[in-house]
Image 1 (cartoon, helix red, strand yellow):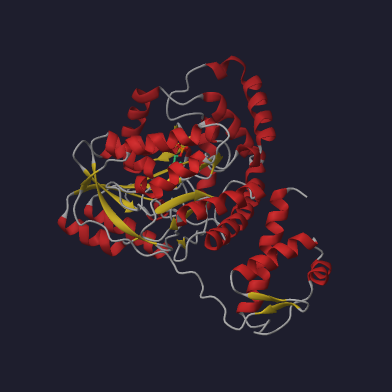
Image 2 (cartoon, protein in one colour):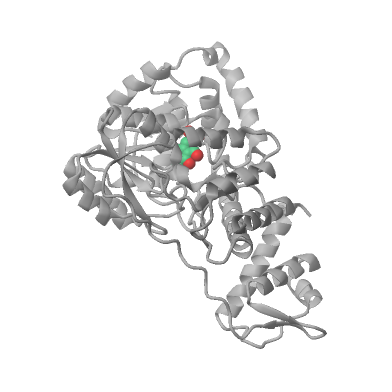
Length: 474
Ligand SMILES: Cc1ncc(COP(=O)(O)O)c(C=O)c1O
């Protein structure tokens, strides 16, 4: 059986049994079915059950009594604690992450390194055959047109597809509202340039997506950090307070499945965020890169869906769901649309056309929703598996985020742990991780790492997490 499938089965078996113990169906002292019996009952492999029982034993739910079998323990472990809400500076800060982030990127690029540091799902789980077919046939059908410039806003059929998709985000945007960009990175960069200049202060989440911090640094801007609640997202009370005392020029936020924390802001908070900023005349740059990757329920609304005066610039891409290398992203810039069009034109004269054609054709064909369902289930199950492995192998006191979508985990190790050292040591063993300090302007989060749980589970991944846990404890 493929590693990925086997991995999912044992994670499911573990979760199911844990649920039965936690809700009291299996009480302290109860004897579990034998491994063979349980495998027969659930129609799964003996090894899968063995693995699940071993994990539950490691986590303190079960005990093995020689010659007698597996029993539910009398005292079960405390559920793992949530991440703490960080304390942040009450002053605007200069950003200094670019050189370290560049070092980390180099590690991502190395061949034969297990990419647990990059927030990039492997291409093997993407519908690359179907996309390649669409690419070839779209380019053939358009003949010589695929060679020409498509000046911004971009390829019309793709703009129309985005407008249709915007209904699922709670918006009703038209094709004219979008500009196609080279990934979400370019969209964020253009938005920053559209609304702020050197020396201006940008409100950001803490921890923040480090790519955005690098852009802010390179544009000579400063940041004001807002603490993140591990499940609810940016603290709006902190933002409201900061708006009273600091001249903030713009705010960047990821209400849906923030990178690295994985939090999801409620609709009420999204509305409050939009209102707060609109009232103060401060543009919101919304990064919805992971918005299509909810583990449960409907695709969440975007904050832009509460925008009444064009103050929100919504940015995203197909990098996490289809093809990062196609570099197809977009921005719906509200009242900044015209400015974004000009900036995009001067920056690159438009994005590459063939990949826009391929994505438009793939979306028209209707395969995207089916693919997303598969991806969401896969990431949900892997996030659980990675989480459990981290809690099992890392030093006592380690906390791990509980993402509600996306494919990254934010791991808080005990105070004494040094994530930069771990980054170096892990790389020597062929594993990349993202050290916490690149997620804040001034080197906070030294005992944190971000892990990419988009890499399909395998024994190699399990061993890598065990190695990381051991190194973290040294
Ligand atoms: C939160 C977030 N925003 C933006 C980006 C950039 O995406 P793209 O590859 O589309 O430029 C990333 C990539 O990791 C990301 O995690």
